[in-house]
Structure formats: C-alpha cells, structure tokens
Length: 152
Image 1 (tube, rainbow, N blue to C red):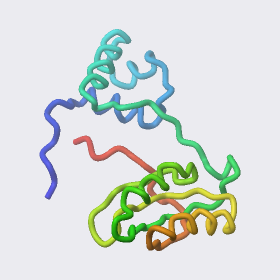
Image 2: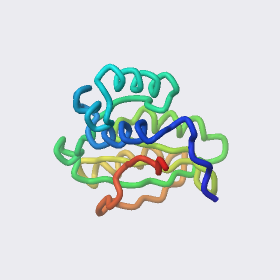
Image 3: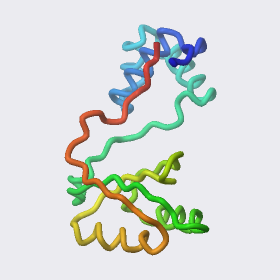
Image 4: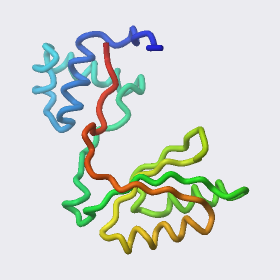
C-alpha cells in the first residue's frame, strides 16, 4: 500500500532534489535555475532540506571497476547461533563490503561486495564462513542504480 506523500515537500523541493540527484556537484546558481528560484532562495531551501534530514549527504558515484574491482557479488549471510555481532563486525571491518543491510527473513544480512578476483572473493567469504552460512550471487549488471524514491 503506498504511503501518503510527504506534505512538507513541495514542487520546488522536488525539482531541487531531482536536480541534485542527477548532479550533486551542481552550483547553487544552476540549482536555483533548475528550481525556478533566486540563488538566495535556493540556498535557504537547501539549508531547510538538510536541517529536516531530507538531504543527509552530497555524494559521488564511483565505478568500482575503474578502481580495479571488476567483480561484484551480492552475499546473503545467515550467522550461526550466537555469532550475529561477530559477523556484523567482520562485514563492517572488511572494506570490500561496500553496502550491507540487516534484513528480516531467513538471512540476517544482505551485502554487496567488490573484489579484484574470484580468489579474493573466496578469501573474504572464508572469513565469514567460519561464523555464518553464505549464499553468493555474482552481479552481471545493475539495470536500476540507486535512485530517488517517488517524490509525488
């Protein structure tokens, strides 16, 4: 069931969020133009969006393959009894785990892993396998990248 739209977000805020999602490095002048505002008005709205927690950070999108990590995997992790916190710490301390969600269901974690080789993947999974059962799927493509939720 869809949730009710956030009444605190108006059309101008939506235009600003969409513009920033497309290019978080755009200048304040460009952002103001995209939203149909003056630069001072855009700056004030931007400040309020940050204060309200709508905007948590301005970030970049890096291609792991360009940094020498051509392989990505999604790893479903089910810690052995009493090992939840140990497994979570292993994932947090392994920099090749670039995302991890704690989830409901049979598995406790679903994580994204970037690696340089299958040998590296095996070595990382071996550390986790001592404390958890894993199920790994290699990522072939990402047809939907991280994007904004519907703002309407």
